[in-house]
Image (cartoon, rainbow, N blue to C red):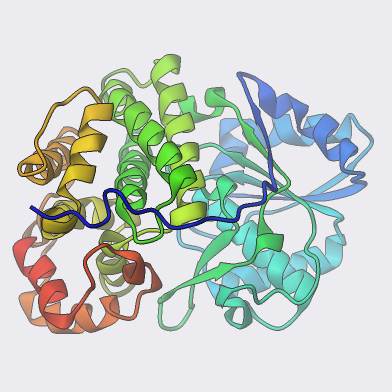
Length: 388
């Protein structure tokens, strides 16, 4: 089994842009940290569920105690769209904030970044699809994740769906990186079971995909491996014991480290083939990517089998380069079953006659260009067929 990537890593040139504040109860420091950034007017972008959970009020009170004016925007959903970003920009025009706070899951943080792009630079979010499209400095942003999944707080990208086509648009720029990320594991205790499952599988997929991309480098693989170690240890525990704070902490830090790895090495084919399932059939992202990941792992095996063996070793499982991919793929499937999630496309009634169209969509996805095995029509179609 050949493995040309196992001893070859890409050069890197990375500038640290973000302060990370971790610890139980650290959300109560948001006012202090905002004041250090000179904030006088803040707009919090958070989904309505965070109000019910009480997290929004805690953040608001902390900010107000520093004499900071606080307004908010809540009108967006799990997959923020270009229309929702536009609504947020209109709200920002009323508030005139000098700092943004993204509080919630990946949707809150991505929507906050999308608003930041358009509010500061004008146009629509479509103008910032790709990398480096910002035309001026953006507002400073503090990210406070309440789920353990996307790692968006660690990334300079926003993932926004086109309101009409539902296509996911990655919009990235170094100036969109958060100034501060607050990681408070207490916030993740309020996640519903379904959210814990979906975000956890998403984080696991990030750790696995970033470890084998064409852009892997000494820094990214350090984050990927540590992320996988933490996530593989914590995932089953949080499913069985939702109030286990130690396991929640493992998941939160694992998701964050996986986000750091994405920022430095990007993703791969599992995300490329999952995104069209979300766009065309409204399959939740964590479900889509988790379901497609085993097939991608097996496809990549001839090239990166020894790298998968390294990942398994980090979680205490010994495997050879020849059987590591199958063992890892089976482990992912086991996690899906534990979480009560679908393991096959047929479980979700995805018609086989759509596979050609899904394949065409997948081949346009930017993440696929970083996969260790180049994507073609035949092998992408094969991924959908083998996941049936």
